[in-house]
Image (cartoon, rainbow, N blue to C red; front, side, top):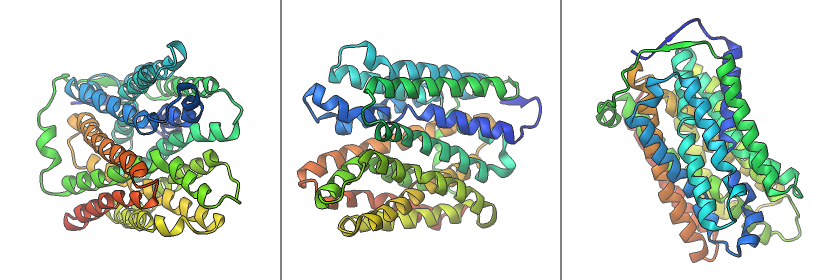
Length: 394
């Protein structure tokens, strides 16, 4: 069952999916980008960890709802994407409509995350449905688009430092909705034949020995590291600037560089996977990002150009394994439950990110903002490498 395709997709369709994913996921870190503007108005710095975790919690709740009701497998995926991205954009703008209080800000971020459950995993499902023969390459571009979308609010904040935070929120919201409209307009029509009944098979399949479990374990280890580093990259750059007071740089722009570099890792890894295989590419990226995490206490004392180079390499490998891990999972599940399983996988993965984000948020001030706290992230890629090496995949 699932979606019946009316005609084969082409490069234009792939480009549209990538652009829509980029636009939709720009909502993800919009709260982080405007946080420096909000903190003086709120008179607190307590939101630094929770503003990210609220999105993650919303995303987890959303993925559970989307999975239980099999929304990605029951309704046309482009329409699910559009409705979800509109709702996420509305919640993103809720900060502007309600009194500026921490509770309302977190509610806005939670709602944004909830409906992003119909954007990121649904975009992956569309790609898996249409581009299975070259899925590793396609996932590289698709997850790369998510990385660029995640980084975009930092760029907007960095380039337009005098730009009111209201304009930042409006910009990303309009961009997100435009991406959803483009996707519905361009993608070929599909006919859905799913029953809409939640399939309990998705749970035991995740840990069934074999290629699927290798991808799942790798993905969980990857998620422990990824969003915690992204969330606290501005904090790391602040620590670096304190250690190098004579060197002035735009921390928001450097945060954009560090996150956006992941696009090169995702896209380049997708091309390498055609020759080397997804398992090898994912394992290599996990190993290098793990080494980078371990080297943070040393490299933070390096010269600015050396540190920026390190940041770019870190960004490339930190995200470069994600599309290949998703590919390993996607090609090892039946098509009729692919959307539900991918949504459930991301649900569990983002649950893991909350643990690492909140633990790191607690450790940083507790350790006097020491960069040694970032060693908390090392076990994630170690687990991912273990899963991939010990459970060979196709």
